[in-house]
Image (cartoon, rainbow, N blue to C red; front, side, top):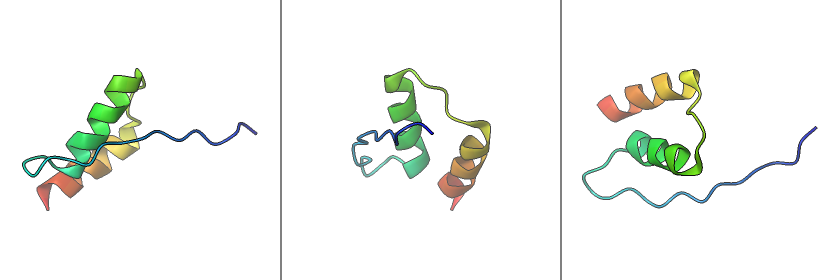
Length: 47
């Protein structure tokens, strides 16, 4: 079992959704956002 990895995420700006902030964190780190997480974040952004 791999040790847990933690990634610091900046709080979103007032005009950003949580999904956009998390996507930006994954892109900055060079990882792809898992498809399931991307779908859930799209749903959150619409709320």
